[in-house]
Amino acid sequence: MNTTPILRCENLSKVFHDGKNKVEVLKGIDFVAQAGETIAILGRSGSGKSTFLHLLGGLDKPSAGDVFLGEQNLQTLNEKDRCRLRNKSFGFVYQFHHLLPEFSALENVAIPLLLGDMKIDQAQERAAEILTTVGLQARLKHRLAELSGGERQRVAIARALVTEPQYLLADEPTGNLDNHTAGEVFNLLQELNEKLHTTLIIVTHDKTLAEKMQRMLVMEEGKLD
Ligand SMILES: Nc1ncnc2c1ncn2[C@@H]1O[C@H](COP(=O)(O)OP(=O)(O)OP(=O)(O)O)[C@@H](O)[C@H]1O
Ligand SMILES: [Mg+2]
Image (cartoon, rainbow, N blue to C red):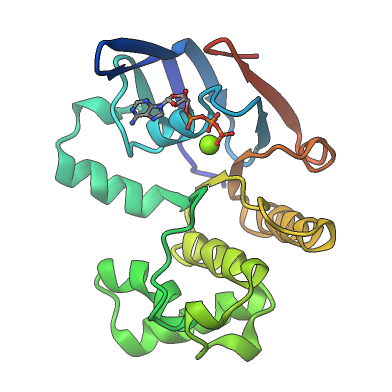
């Protein structure tokens, strides 16, 4: 039985105050992700895609509106509980990957498990498994600084997936990759969706890849349609 709670938002709005300027980025978005669904979000640069993903995953606070995971309103949680829920339910692939350059691929991927209080041996074993899944079994001990762009991207995906989150929120996971590698990364994400029923919400500029998702939405003028 799939017990993934539904992720949804109501009237989600975000305004940035930049000195005197007020930038209305999201203007009352209603959105529902069904469990196990694969969704692509397209839209021009600056349209608010990253902002939307951050709000959906509880990384930032909306100016108005609410995000719900099942019955839980993310806004009514305190910071500690929101962090815990985030760690448990969401995997993030950031637009700029935030991996630690001086740490090995294995260490980077093991970190979320260690934060979740797993023992180090078990965390490393699990990290090695998921890195093997993304085709990096021969790069476990390489420092991030020694990996190619595509390899780093795959480490970032492994790190997001190592906790087996119900939701993967990925911000241009194939940005900066050549077409072939981008296709492989997408295939990998689809496989994970099929095997683990991970719900995928992926921001991408690549229409061909976006068309492989079940649903395609466009961010435009602060609305998602
Ligand atoms: N912290 C912030 N303070 C002020 N303005 C911000 C902030 N974050 C984002 N913005 C503004 O909000 C708008 C949307 O930004 P966002 O990063 O969500 O766009 P995006 O659709 O992800 O673009 P890209 O495709 O280039 O990544 C931009 O105009 C940006 O300048
Ligand atoms: Mg962005």
